[in-house]
Amino acid sequence: MKALILIDKEYQTDIYEQLHNTIKDYFEQKKFELDEIKIGKEDLAFCMGCFGCWVKKPGECVIDDTMSQINHKFINSDVVICLSPLVFGQFSANIKNALDRWLPNVLPFFITRPDGSTMHPSRYKSYPRQIVIAYAEDIKDEDAELVVDIVKKHRRSMDVIVYKNSQAKLLESLNNIDMMRVGDEL
Amino acid sequence: MSIVSRRVILVNGSPKIKSNQSVSELFVNLQENSMKEAGIDVGRINVRDSITLGKTQEDYLEMSQADAIIFTFPLYIFCLPGILMRFLQDYQQFLMKQNLTIEKEQKIFAVVNCGFPEPDINEEAVRVIKSFSRQIGALFGFGVMIGGGGMFLGTIDAPFMKKTKAELYNAFDQMSEMIIKMELSPMENRFIKPNFPRKLYLFAADREWISAAKKNGLKKRDLYRRPYLK
Image 1 (spheres, each protein chain N blue to C red):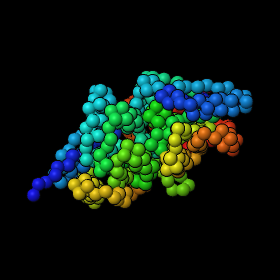
Image 2 (cartoon, rainbow over the protein chains, first blue to last red):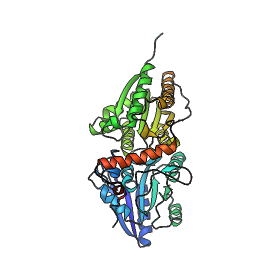
Image 3 (cartoon, chains in turn orange, brown):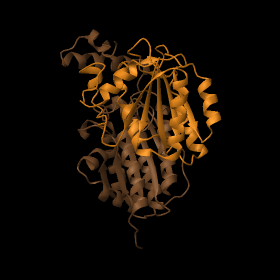
Image 4 (cartoon, each protein chain N blue to C red):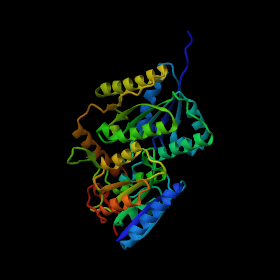
């Protein structure tokens, strides 16, 4: 089993260190093969909204940088954990750049989900289990609720945990997640 | 009677390189019309240009001194695009480093559009701008959530868009009024979408992708490629 951890180089705080160590130990104990990618300010170009990943080079970003390697690893992992600083209630800029450029992994078309909402169909038959763990030194309740809504209102196969310094709670949340690939429901 | 002049900065957070191809730019143009008509002094900032041309410091200073800022941007994966997050994170750092405080009455508005037909999908993005406003010490006015964003370029002046265009102007005029009166209490968010059947919009959008691919020399089946499968 393979786990990929995405990390923001910009926020290497004490709370990040604790969180990172806990996550590494957790997956090592479960005998996962771990891979880590640290994303800094200069590492990824910004998505340019060109939709080339849909209509020019379907499934791949047209920008030639490390994102293609990240997407390749993403698709071939069992679990992807995103350690994201919580900024204004959402993902930090570096992590969000990677998430924006995840777009090649879905199809351009529209589908209507059972609840009536509109979404893009999946490109692959299965995806890694995705878990976002949001952290910050001081988290306002409003921001914690917001990041949960961003993920849970719109994504069916993505989990979100807000890390507020409690290792026990983090482990409990992780234990409630099936650490294996999921189907094609995004 | 002396008239106090107000200044607004219209920030376009579209990641697109050619801004004339962005729907956000269209909405910023409408805002500019509304603000100028109300006698408000208008400044414009394009986030990608600001970052690429290394103008962020002067743009941040201008933003910090304005009476109001309107952020207009597309929804990316259900929240703000990375490029706009970079711009806002660095702005917050700038304010801290320069030891600048925002004038208490500064108002911030959000105008978010998405390709999905439902305007309310943009709600979380509006809340992110609200959280940002609170953290820098500005007052959040309200958000405008726009669905069916893919339709606006090219149809905005069509007769069937008349009502939608009026709704947009109504929202922007409301912003102008709040800026002029220095209205302190927030207003309800607005939800706007083209007056067009949802099914037809989805159908047309799907056809559009296939035709775009064909222009690039691809066949319909190429759109389904799975390049990262081992």
